[in-house]
Image 1 (cartoon, rainbow, N blue to C red):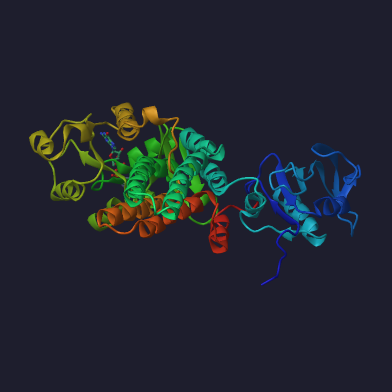
Image 2 (spheres, helix red, strand yellow):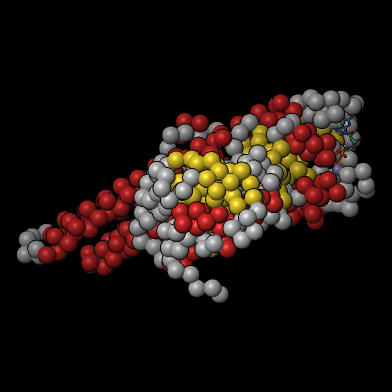
Length: 462
Ligand code: GDP
Ligand code: ZN
């Protein structure tokens, strides 16, 4: 492994791969200006003012070959994202010139940036805190306008501020406890401090619990609502999938923007991001006899946050239908009676016995009937109750969620300790623990491995 100094000069392509109108190659570090000057023909970049855009050409200094016509942004430290000198080369976007420019930078003194390394530097230089760094990541992955807003909110520091307030409250009470312990000669000190600790632990714990309630929704906004479409062969699964994918709403995304080989299908239904599970199974078997069924469905259902079960309304219920209904009875589900354009043979009385009215709806995918209602139901199911909470913080990040659970446990330990009559200085340890754990969220107390692991989840060039 190559040894690298912490703040050497790094470079990467920071626009997504593919043929865009322009691409940006970005470089950060002490030698950025020097490196760029070696391959740039135009004004002397070392003389230009900070935060200017400069027209010129990229030229291979060895062969004198002209690579591309470019605009070069020069941003000097410290007023930059990383708080280091940053150069951004806007070039014409073809893969070949963009890669060539990156290569030239690497040959002339820069090192290839690791994934997330630009953002990591911004963090290490105090430009942003950890929740903000993570929201950069969330923004890159945002699936809908709403998840974009949540990420932007965190970028503004909403969550950080909330966590900082909680920590300050804990710190205040810890200080108070210290003072009280230092003056044991006063009467009732033990009782007073215990009461204080108890009150604060309860209060902070309640606020954490409030925050944790947003976690399920937040995760869905970020990762998408895992949705399985199931039903026996020929009920209309592929037709429904095509409808969902075709309404101009389909986004095909690579997972987390990092691994290029895992493709998942997303659709936005009225701002609910659905992550469709096992659509390969549905695509594959189209026009063939489906090698069902229940086993594959069972797996998809297991992973799903929402199951859409299709039944054929023009046929009587089958054993398989009943199995699927049984399998999903504890799940969030929509039971869709399809093919309502044909004469109805399904036993409605039986269906209504096993399926709650609010889970049930009818469609004809063929005739485009009932599909608006379907979308409406999906949106209702998931925005009910959070409509009014737009302004509050929503937890989208599993690391934050895990740490908040830990903090909550520590606070519970404080309360249990007090209940059991433990001495104040022992309860104080758990309280301090909660303070530490909360600090990990914002990065006020962090470990190196955590940072490496966290920032390596970013895309290259971020
Ligand atoms: P899958 O096997 O569950 O994926 O079902 P498909 O989507 O492949 O549909 C099977 C057949 O049913 C196709 O010929 C569709 O055109 C047809 N179909 C789908 N939805 C409807 C509907 O609402 N009404 C009618 N009459 N036919 C439908
Ligand atoms: Zn099919």
